[in-house]
Image (cartoon, rainbow, N blue to C red; front, side):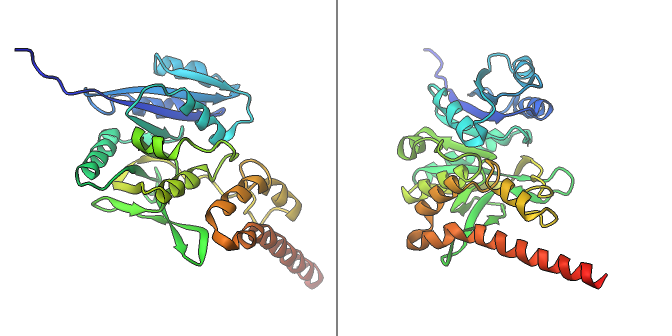
Length: 297
């Protein structure tokens, strides 16, 4: 009699990068050995116009990696959508940010949590890995909830627990998505520029009956992006903040319009204009304060 063998679970890891060679290399190294012998892991990397040798270094760390080249203007959403289009056959997609360092066994925990939820008849679901700051240990990325029904596009982080915890959507740093969900929801919306595409995907999945579950504990490290020097930094001039806000990594109007029309309900025009109005209002107050400060001096 021949020995029966368990089917191999095929996981395709999707990564987007731009000029972060060292981070990308560390991320790929933390992926080595993940999943165990019954899991086949392959990687599709969109290198969005890097000039620091990221693609070459990635091939050295992960032989067989598929590298797609961007022009430097894809940013996260379009780069991840491009990677997903080249995934081929798979059982799961794993979204992985290039600045994530996975803990040993992280992929196994994601897979086992998803399988456990499937056995409990929880329906189609997405498994999210929460991440922590490498210095402080504080949770940096996880699942997300709306703050309230009155604030439909304002979100707060959901802390992981000792059991799976449900959320409404998620940060896209470490996310396991089964093929069944992709068939229902589709891929990342490449019409977003950079951010919001992960929140949008989770919300769309929820509308279609796919639950978002946070895996117990944290599964790796990923520092938060610094706010100093971005459009929310009050130390910058109003003109510079507005320019950064409208840039691809800020809150570009086209992406925010797309997001609010989909997810903010009938009051979406109010939610669309509110961050821009608030920026002008706070910028004007800052000017007044500085003016009074100069007179007092």
